[in-house]
Length: 135
Figure (cartoon, rainbow, N blue to C red):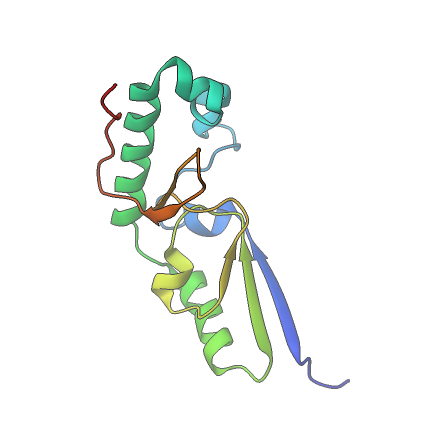
């Protein structure tokens, strides 16, 4: 069997759970405590922007405090030192793969560390604390 020239790796919540980041859908996960429609939809934001911003400020704080674990570091090493081109695709909204040293990461759901304007689509690094815009 010949060596692969390219490898695609898909990661999900389990890899970052080992770094202390709670999952969304597991029993006891965030969506068992919060209604996703209140936090992850434009309608939820329109109803209560303060609640949504408070939740994501808390999530960003948790992401920034988390550290890459052994699995993140092993995948980064494979990407840097392996013979095949590695594309890492993650469902996670943290930056632990990047902090572990993975050179190319595709985030299927974006990250908590990037803000995006709903009107024009412009993206920028999210500040530590986001507050509602003044009316």
